[in-house]
Image (cartoon, rainbow, N blue to C red; front, side, top):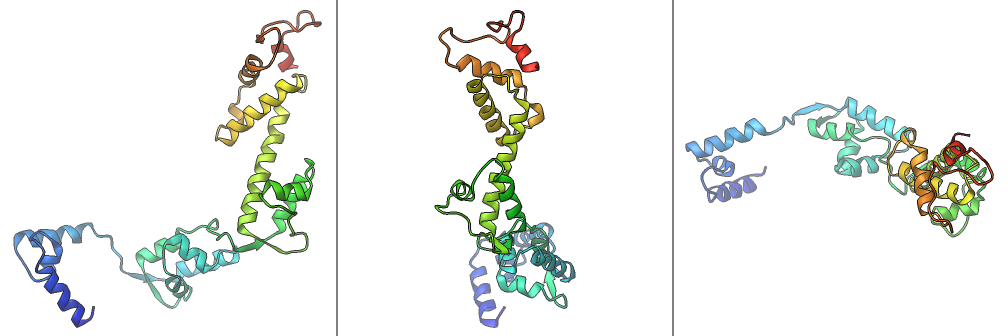
Amino acid sequence: MSTIVSKNFRVWGATQPHGKRARYQAGCRCSLCRKANTDYERTRRPNGLVSADRASAHLLSLRAAGVGYRAVAAAAGLGRATVAKALRATTKLRAETAKAILSVTKDALLDGAFVPSTRAKQMIEELKKEPLTQTRIARELGYASSLQIAKSPYITARNERRLRALYYAYCLGRAVDTIVPQSVPAQIREDVCQDILADVLGGKPLESVRLSEYVKKAYSFGPSKFGPKSLDSFIFGEPGRTYVDMLEG
């Protein structure tokens, strides 16, 4: 702190009420101001200088994963110059600065950052088996034309995240499709699959899904001139077989 700033701070501190640390720093040593300073010293977190070795190694590993120092600075709430300085393992950092850098993970990519497109290409090939064309995939991701990544070794982090979410949804769709028997009427089966998928995407574990509850709900709301069906009712033309038996078989 410069002499001028220090002098101005002391002048300002002298105007503060007793019991404020600023008044203590201005020179007051009354019991209230001493207590305010003691309370501050007890509660403040230690923020001494520490070696930058760990932070520097972490930054290098993040860089290898495609997370640059600008993305780290944005995620950690630090200045870019501070993070750039931390790359030099020969320097020292404040403990809180090192802690903030070490808390950043590989998910802290900026939207415009470029990442390898290898995984993205694999996901696109898997999605084409649905079947989805590359143009349809692009539209699902919010783009008017097809994604031009066939020859590019990189893709933006934003597109990679969107593609991963789309891939996850379709993979879940396949998993849901396998647990609903094909013997369920087509319209009812579609409603059941959509309801299960919505709940699973909302966080419900797939293994906790009780299929009979979803089928019962679909039948209760499904259009029928005979009204809602019960799972215990018999299937017309199949004596002795109920809708529950249809689910099991």
